[in-house]
Image (cartoon, rainbow, N blue to C red; front, side):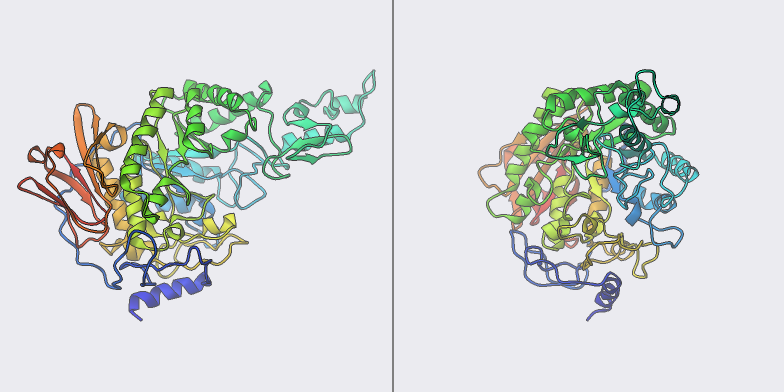
Length: 565
């Protein structure tokens, strides 16, 4: 066993390694993997346990980062990210301590999962919308985080849960108390009226969706009433038709925007009015318009977990972004391109154009929000069978899309997270081989075998997953055309494993050529106009391989991407 493997085994022991389910058990297969072997699927990683020789990369360009809402976002679950005080729970000071790392990786946006007071570890049941959960720190800690983000040009957006509150929120408890109290008499009961504790005089009775009949997704409140709770009986759904509720969320949004927050990720927008997308779109329009009135540069992204033909309708609201579920998760197109023989990269480029055009028809200012995995899904490392070549190849697809790509913390090191429990998807970040700053696993998390090295070790390995991500974000930050440009397909024939596009923005055009076959490919096709182009940058899944362009012939290694201009 190499010293490298011994270190990782020590890390895995801390997390109590287990055998994973057969569908996710595959071989890690690169220099930063501890489980070399064969791999199923269309991509084969190298089986060497030693880092590949690094080819001198000659194409680093000047950064050209535009201060707008096209950004590279990094999703953080604070609980599992970085523990600054040794209590085993990640905190805001921990996030602040890693801002230089985040910026160095090329991310200029951060999405924080809920940080408001809550009764659960995940904090999607909010008890106070204008405070910080004590597990994460104080409001002073938050203010410091915002200030430090601003110094680095990082836009910070917060998870905002408008669909439901906690059943411990004062709105709900006062409603419950009122409905459990004797009804006021005709003349009114003085004590009841003074406390606002009767149904007639408690405004919070109308903050939630109540029924006197039992319904699906309704929970019994008392002998007379049931309340809607689409996710859990401790997460009662709010009545977003109520003007008072809307005013509450306007005040909440202004509170955080005035503190310097750059916008919000809006949870569960399809459940605002379950089964009524028109009402959901109307509700989004109200909230988007309000936030823009406070800060015209406010960025909002909605979670609408559906296929493209469904979620694209939500762009009618004027919201800048809706998460791109069509390409994400284990069933999405990115995973299919990497894992299945029948789906090629040409299908991916076709889908990019369809998505781009569909968004523009609904909202000319819309910004796609692509991702591979997030806190609600099995991590991409397991979906891609712990094969670092596959993980890198998937990242290459994500990071060449238009819009604002979202990368889930730990995705850049191949962090594990498999199984059927949400806690599994929120495993602690591994910063170094000593476990420094790494929080304890969330209670209830099944132990996960971490197949790849820590952040610190991967940073030192030119062939690591981390350094692939770092170059990919760098290329995006050098070339604003990638995120903002209009895409046109280039016809390279019938081979589904090769594809090319042009993307034009502000008078400049970048050409992106994909070879997602298992062999090096040569391109001399006149459709690429190679005689007039130079290499702007490239991505290869093996740092010992490079893209070349000599005498009108472009050579791209397996699963490589060339950027030409």
